[in-house]
Structures are given as structure tokens and as C-alpha cells.
Image (cartoon, rainbow, N blue to C red; front, side, top):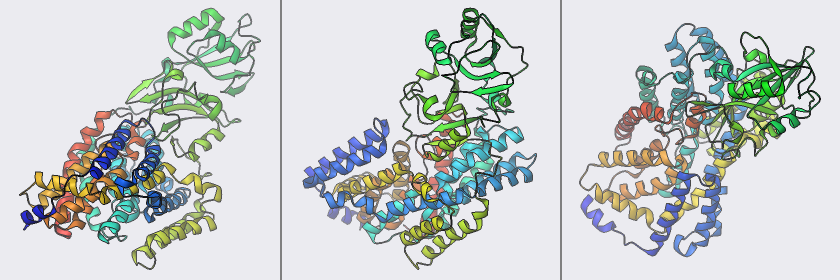
Length: 611
């Protein structure tokens, strides 16, 4: 029977397929190289498929249909719902309780963090879950004297797996549901694959608890504070401006421009009062104590040429950067892939003036960088050690292209009193959709209205809560999926894959699609993987007489498990810098887990739905 189906389904290669395959090739190259931001690539896809309508079959109305897609609008609503929960500070409370409960036990702390990340991500989108847990985990690591490297990657992995517990855990599932509805007339219900998700999450947690953390080196040694963690002792020095120093009477901006040295003046102390960077217009006076960031060689040159004297100081710590009146703090800030600073330098964007913050060091791929950091192009995943004002901290926290890694012991920024309301709203959204009282799109939008009406999310925070690059990406990729289907490209590629695997059992073909998708999703976004692979998987299942829905699930789960690189999934990039990881650390811990998940997922699908 399968051989007969193969013979009947053999499509002829056409010009339409050639055009669509060429377009897919260009898109893949742009996604992998990131020559332009991926959301801009997605907008380009809309333009291309519409201009090529005679071959793609996608006209203007279909080209922009992604912006009105239930998947796109639902994902947008889930970002806002997640923000409402985040604003309550619920994870901060839980984290403090974990510290108290798990005192002295690494396995208690580790297991609690991994379990919390995995289970929470089933209800809240996993990206904000990890954003909330990074400061919690680093706070716990410092208080309990363990390396944050041991905690952060497992949290990211657990959140990815936990996102597969429900329909709303990740944008990938919501998009896959939309594609499944279009191709099979079978969208996902809220808990359609919860049993399979529990198998996958359980497999992952057991691996992380028993094996995973043993494969992770301590890239960041346990440290008392950030100055120790970033090994700043050789780059921070206090000096005094003596009376005959050329600095006296000049402004900081003038002095630094004339010197043209790799040095930053972090702080000026005068008559018991401290002034923090940026300090450009401030004039030097005799007796000023300067806190400098510079190398030893540059310091010697500076002291000899400008007649500065060293201050006898035991050790510079994080407390030396704290200025109570100005509410200055020392903190870590992570750059995500969509940040506008990527490929720019601190100097070209005038970082200190633009963000009211001074960068002291950069952590990249496990290495600490100090020299000429103002002239160094920035990359996604870079962690910046910055001294920032309270206003600057709020700006970084509002900007979704940054992740702030800060010891947030203060509860003032959270709306703890709104926790019962926010929890009730999310429960209502899930319950109404699960009972099919209303579609998930309607319940999610209703939840957004309720969040704003009750003050869990303020009106001016609604648009800031949305990751617009994801929304544009979804809207741009949906018409590409349509072009694959209408041009016959999906059927042609599926035919090729089934011919290559001719004679293998349906379960083995399912495994092949899972593995292939998991490889593709390491290189391009998880949402792009779903758009490209689900049409092929459905065609392959129909050609061989297998269950198409089972193949849709395999692709969906595989696309949500980008475990091998820091760039395959946003949560991996979020922990890349704060954990001090190297690129190969993800492969080291992720590869064995990827194999286990491939087996567990495919066997689970076979056992629950059949193949």
C-alpha cells in the first residue's frame, strides 16, 4: 500500500517550485547569517511572495494575512498576560523561599529551580519566565556560594521543555496549531499534548538532575560580588588629583579627549560627596579622588603624565559603586539578538549618554574583555557590567532587547497585591479555552483587557510587554508556508524524503522528521522551522499512509528543543552571558538530551496517538 501511494503522489518539478525553493534558500541564508535582523527578513518575505504571486500563488491579501492570523494575535496577547504575572513578583517570592528551604543543599536548590522553570513555562510564555529567573538564580548562586554556570543553562532547557505542556507555553505551539488547523482542520486544544509534554519534561528533568549539571564546568567562579565575578581588581584604581596636576580646572570631557587613552572615570569623590558617570561637564579640582577603569600600563602613563597619586585602598568592592543619593548601582545587562546595539560600538551609539550608564567590562563566550571596549562591535549574548542610575535601570528593564541581571531584594517595583487578580485572570484564560467555551484567541484578548482594567498591567506598559520582532516574524513567515503548499513545493520535498526512507516503518520516518527538524531549528528560528517542516511532514504522512497529526506533533516538539547552540533559541541566548558559557557548552550538555528527547517524543506519540 505505501509503495502504491508513493507512485501515485510523485509530483513533477515545476518553475513554481524552483522559485519558491530559491526564495526559501535566500531566507535560510539570511536567517543563519543574520546579515539583517530576522524580523526585517520576515517583512522582506511578505514583499517577495506577493511580487512573485504568479509562481507562489500568494496575493496581497494573503501576504498580509499573517498579521491577522489567530496565531499572531494570540502570541501577542500571551506576551501581555505574561507581563501581568511578571509584574506581581511571584517568581521573586518563590526564589526567596527556595533559598530558605534549600539552605546548604545544592540538589534542593538546583531541583527546585529546574522544576519551577519547567512547570511555570507551561502557563507563562517561556521567554519571560527565563527573564524572571536569571536574576533569581544569580542571586541564589551568590548567596549560597555556587557558580551560576551550574544553574542557568538547565533553567533555559527546562523552560523550553516545560513550554510544551500546554498550547500557550510557547509561540511555536500556537503557530503550529494554526498551521495544523489550515492543513488538517485540527488545531491544538489547550491540553491536547499535555501528556506527551509531561513525558518530555520528565525525561529532561531526570537528565538534568542526574547527568546534566555534571557536564557543565564552572565558567564563573562563586563570587562575593560583581567586582569579584568580573575580576575587576586589575582594572579598577583610585587616584588623587594633586594641586599641580594638569587636570585641575579642566572638564572630564576635555581631559579624556586630549589624552586619547583607554580609560573611564567611573566616579569622583569630593569633600565626602560622590558623583557618578557620566561626568563629561564636571571640572576637576585638587583633592578629587577618582575611581578609574583602565589597565595597569595605561594607569602608569596617566599617573606620570598627569601627576596623579594612588590611594592606599585595601580592595575595591561593589559597595564602592553604590551612591545612595543618586541611587547608582552596579549590575549586569545582557544584549539579546534583536537589540539595536548589535554590530555597533559603545562609542558609536554614545552609550553613556544614551542610557545614563557606564560600561566597565564585557563578558563574551566565557571571556572577560576590558581593553578598548568602547571600540568593540557588540554581539548578541554579550553581558555588560555597567554602573547605572535608578532611572537607567528602569529603562533597561522596560526594554525587551535587554535582560537585567540584578540582585532585586526590593519589592517596591513589584505589584504584589495584584498577584491573586493576575493569577485568576490567567486561570480564566486557560480554563475558558480548555473547556472550549470560547477560542483561545478570544479568551487571551479578554485576559489582556482584564489585566489592564484591574491595573495588573498599566496602559503604557502594554506595548512594551510585546516582543514585536516575534510578532513580525510570525506574520512574515505564514505567507511563506502558504507559498510552499500552493506551489507544490511541500509535496515535492516530502516525496523526496519518503523516497530516501522508502521501506522504513512509519515510526522510523517519524523519528527522521523529528531529527531533521531539530537540526534545522538550531540554525534558524523555531517558528521558521515549524512553517517550513509541518507542510512537508503532513505530505509525507499522507503519501505513506501514516497519521499526519502525529507528524505535526513530532515537528512541533522538535522545533521547540533547540538545545545544541546558544543562538537556536532566545532563552539560550539570554543565559549565555550571565552563565559565562562557551559555545561548545551547549553541545556538551544538549546533545545527549537531544537524543533522549527524540526517542521519548517519538515513542510517546506512537503510544498515545499511534503512527
